[in-house]
Amino acid sequence: MEPPPPPLPSATGAVSLPRLPILTSDELSKKAFGPLQKRINSGADVSFFLTSRAYKELMVWIMQLNHSLIPRLSPDTARPVCFPLEPGRRGWSEPVRRLREMLRGCEELILEAPPEENKNRRFGNGACRVWHGKLGERIQGWIDGLGLDIDGGVKEELRGYFMGAWGDKGRLDYGTGHELSFLAFLGGLWKVGFFGGGEEKEGEREREVVIGVVEMYLEVVRKLITTYTLEPAGSHGVWGLDDHSFVPYIFGSAQFTKPILGSRTEATPVEGSCPGAPKPASAVDKQTVEDYRGSNMYFGAIGFIYDVKSGPFWEHSPMLFDISGIKDGWGKINKGMVKMYRAEVLGKFPVVQHFGFGGLWAWEVDPEMVGERSVHLQSQPVQNQAQSLGQGGGEGGTKAPWARGAMGGMSGGQVSMPRPMDGGVMAPTGFPGRQPGMGTPTGLPGRGQVPTPRGGIPNTGPMEQTSFPRGGGMQDRVGGNQFSVTKAPWAKD
Image (cartoon, rainbow, N blue to C red; front, side):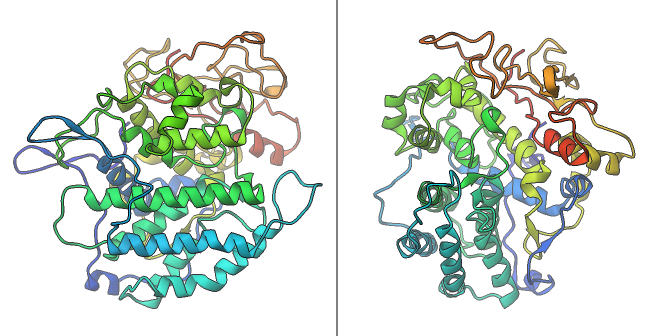
């Protein structure tokens, strides 16, 4: 299934990709703004979220940013024009410059909250709570300094999303839910017209948001993670894509996709690569990663993994290693990353349960999104599926209509079932016989040998109800079923 909403046909028959609306003063006056409200308390609430206006507009915003990064073909020379990161750039637009000042202020707060010496804790340095406290003292002044001519309730919502973008000061962790909060902060600024509303070169403002703001945010977050040894929030463990972030893999793969002519009437390519782009297999080569991490977000994220993890790449990051075997180019990877984001971030209760709702991102049903409920329901914890469905459990992992596999080829509509293992742990299909946490996996190369990437990702699917890791009560059952991995479009059985 393609990311929502579907392209809208124009009068000429061309496809018009939707954009996040900029609200007028009259529209803003009709909305109720204030403190963000927690709405997601169960899997049934996630099911409603997937039909909501907030979910639809979040996906529109992400796809809008994603589309802006796709290389363009020059109308004069027909040569591709790519959009690399620009770490040394100085000529940012005024809105982006102000946001970068905010982010620089967040980074400087680290100097005011040096890490404590505590050798007894592997994760979570207590000084991070001091950092959060200092951020809370300054955030109101920073929001006011953006020069927004908006109601105080709107500013309160923006402040809430910004404060939620830096991890949890109680658990001392950081993950994709916090990353989502920052995207919501930027999308809220877009909605109130902070980035401007006049005509400009197609995608120019959106590119500035990603290259000038999102990338800098990720850099500050990585410094927080390493300074305060923040624990991954809701990590999938060894079979996850990344311990902390997801969006750099979406936007970074977009930077290398097949070029388009440069109009919103042109859909995002689903295969192919930009001429001269490194091959996906280069992601496992340290030197190539080092060469590109300063100009590409995908390689930048992998470069950070190399910074904080040791050992063979295929061992500590097997999913990314498998994806490096994709033969259909960066367009195929980008398509798969978007699908994974919808299912593994927006469709997962442990990730979105802390997301707040208000006037900017509304907790109200969108009729066009009702069909999403059944698609992602299996992503929820077992007992929450039962609450929503009125029965004991859900189906297996989602199989994309275009996925190639033994259970249906390209026909779609099939369900890829998990393979049980001893102790109730599902055996991922990315590598044969891989048993997380059990040393050298069976079926994998021995010492000094490197496996061949399959060009796909593991498909664990949700656990069967009768099989749980620790055999405990309902609490154990929830923990065992919260993180099933969705099969991406590039997966091959």
